Image 1 (cartoon, one colour):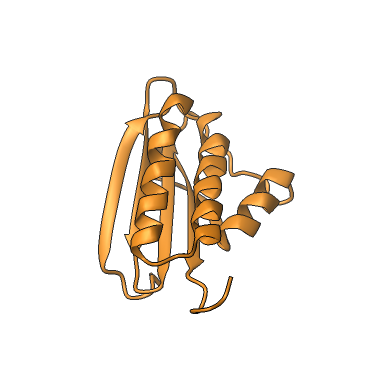
Image 2: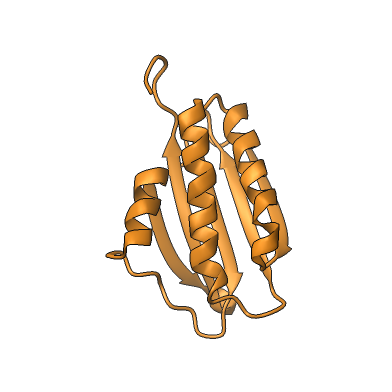
Length: 132
């Protein structure tokens, strides 16, 4: 796993309901700030996490949990968001939502896993000092 020399991992598990997404947006901003991402990058990551969760919640099993894992690297953050689904369908890479997500988060991937988990993984590197 390329994770920019991972230092710490933070995992948050919440009910798979839109009402709890503000917790993830706040955690995303705080963790990105800890890695010295600039304000624009932090806002992009907050919106990207929100967009990824919106894609997943539509397929989540009612009453299930959404899990968000943050791997903090020296100069990058990897964010994985997963929900259990009855029949997981990968998001289409040619939709407007996926295009927006990719523009905001940089490297984005979706995959299915054991237990009918649907996961979206986002990796974003911090801009070089002095860059926007």
